Amino acid sequence: MPSDSPSLIPSSPESAVPLASIRLAGTGDAQNLGAWLQSRHALPVAAARARQALLEGLLARPERGACVVAQASAGQDLLGCLPVTLIPHLELAGLAALATEWWAGDVPADRGAALLLDCCGLLSDWCRAHGVRHLLLAPALLSAALAARAGFAPHASGLWHLNLSPAAKMLG
Image (tube, rainbow, N blue to C red):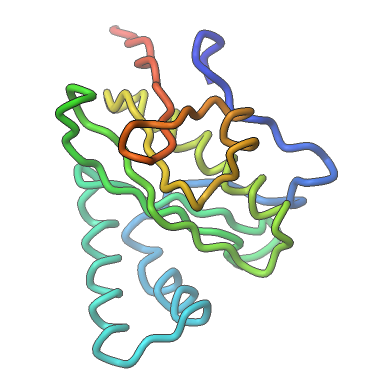
């Protein structure tokens, strides 16, 4: 992250999930991610198909949002998933990245929070690179103390808000 931007709390050795990689999911991840979500929260067939279609649409259209995943480096095991939608926000005068759900795998709650913050770090970099200046999180995703330490502030909408400075552009 650029040094002039607010930084999220770095993971401590005790709370970090060892050997986890954080990345943006692509269209090739749709089936694996859909199966993982179904294993976390099983839905009836029709609803599961609808969720899969929404997931495939999100992954195929990066101008609408992104899906950040945490994955065990040693294998293909997913540890967490942060789907994000880009929304126009009139008060903030531009696009905002809105995350309302966080799917955590079989990790303890403190490690899940560290993974969420790592995902938010990658998401912040992605937002800056694409001109998105605000990150909004549902209030249930972070405790007040953790949100404050990570640089989030309460927004009038009730969401956690992180103001992002744009990334420097390099020409040439």
